[in-house]
Length: 229
Image 1 (cartoon, rainbow, N blue to C red):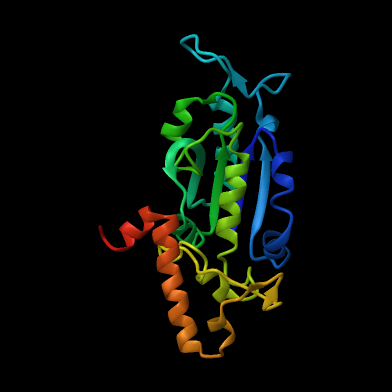
Image 2 (image 1 turned 45 degrees about the vertical axis):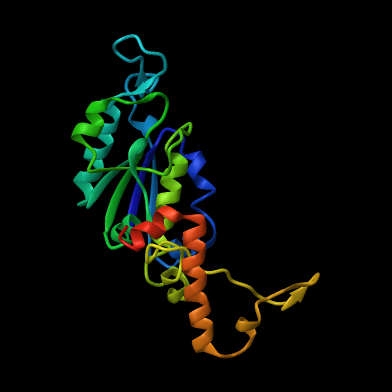
């Protein structure tokens, strides 16, 4: 899989995408991440990528021409399955979206910034838009990193134990059960006895009960969806 990320601030993405599972996936040639500085395609001597909005509103707006030129260049080099835009007013990114996009080959993620982007970009150049929450960030770089991370970790071979990803929260629409490791007792705090029993049938039943209880208590919205309410 290849993910091309278009941004005005590429340095923001360097840290999150160069460590842990993502770095291992790249090193193993399971994924390729290419970060493009939009300013390289800016207009004029000063490489301008933003301008004042029509209508007199405050803030600066990313211009359509640099974005169009860069996306067209990328598309001339390979076929892309999706061009994504990160924005707080888009549909919510979730595990189902991550699962779906992890099966694709080539993706472009365009990071919004400043007041926003010329809306023609969203109308004409973008296939899907995603938000990571009902709040506003300075730019789309951190959401792009989150989306990239959640996709790449699902690629077979990215995680040493592939079953681990399948048991993550949200994979089946519910939260994951609690997990513990050694020591079995610390400071008087004990691991549940059932996990030390060796009775795997009962352990699985305990996990299923915990999944339902935690989801009902922490995410009643997910629990209702799971029950079809």
